[in-house]
Length: 286
Ligand SMILES: C[S@@+](CC[C@H](N)C(=O)[O-])C[C@H]1O[C@@H](n2cnc3c(N)ncnc32)[C@H](O)[C@@H]1O
Image (cartoon, rainbow, N blue to C red; front, side, top):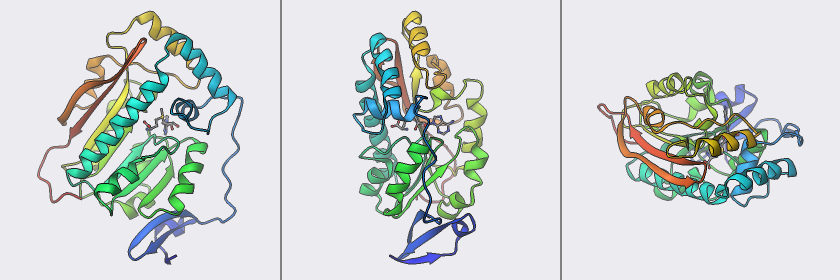
């Protein structure tokens, strides 16, 4: 392994480990253990992991997934379609020259992940994963330990200042250059009224040429009774279904690269996706 650089991470109880100028975030405390998991409460990340065929889920999560399957059997297919959208979006951003990514609401690692996809096109790509679920953080940290250019942070995506002002983020991302900002299957946990100021704060910080990718649940064309049943069955969190125009409004102020489209149609709703770019003079991609 390489040198331990005394960067901002060191001051925060961790270290930025550098090898030939490349780095990865590692926990400073060798005895760090993930926080205990409350197995009586379903988790957004673990239910989604179950739909993707993962192993990091528990009976309490599968019970919610089964209740949902009785209303709408499209969970697994929808989750896979969402992952395809994510991978396509990261490939497209990396091909456009973007080399730094922030994945908000990253989820339990699923291959190919954002950093794998980005590095296949931009080998020196940097990815910052953000999530507030301890299981997600534990698994992503296990990956980050052996992977240069990957940083995993515990933050609430609804607190952009905490993410953007985190010295560890500042130490690895260059905000004078474009960033790919991903909010994939996470904004349906953020209130419709709260989202504009949250997104506005992230976007103000990002350089022209930065791209915003969003996928989220929508009630567009759905049976309102089925939507209501699904919301009641999803006991892991309050699930928010946006109208088409509420979803489109998430990209206000951006130029659309991929206009809002249906990623997957469920019987009780639809997953919408889109990609927008922050216009303005760009210095250079990267
Ligand atoms: C459905 S998963 C999506 C994972 C991944 N983005 C994907 O699309 O494959 C949603 C993720 O968002 C996280 N999440 C939900 N609300 C959050 C919040 N307020 N702050 C940080 N993460 C959040 C959950 O823990 C979960 O890992």
